[in-house]
Image 1 (cartoon, rainbow, N blue to C red):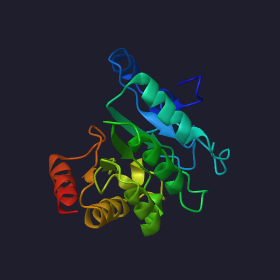
Image 2 (cartoon, helix red, strand yellow):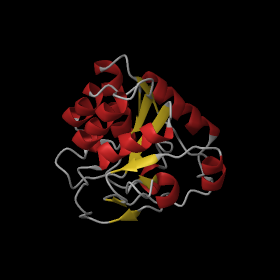
Image 3 (cartoon, one colour):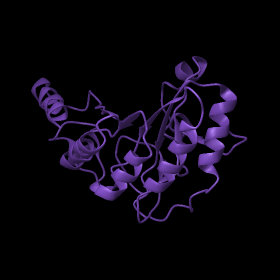
Image 4 (tube, one colour):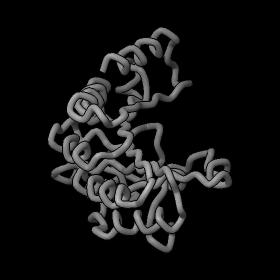
Length: 197
């Protein structure tokens, strides 16, 4: 990963489970550099209004690393890049296409919400990942406290619904964190909202 100048969310976000995952051969690669344009309160990734430019070789390097490691399943996530016109959707699509060229590889992407931009979501969908994820992160009431103001509970639901509606062969998924002060009823509401979308 270091030789090909690739980042992992494991290292950049200071994940406490990194030892367990890496010792088991699992890592989640992070596209678009290691600096995010958002500042969610739960995340330790570096932030800046104007991160460095994208590395145009990053999608190729990612595919080379995955092929070399002989993986059969890869999860690719990224920082948010609200500074880019398409939020980085084209960069994601390039990476997906290169990864899908590897025989037998299943590709899961955990993307930004692209500020809800429909065309950006379509750009990723047209690249045909096997799984598309966009995280709700928390319950509706806690979203303004936990997430960056540019993220939104409904915006995430709408992104997931668009992908599901326009690209029905792509599996859609989401995740939420627990232990932030949510109630059981709020968790059930979030799960019901995800199911409905």
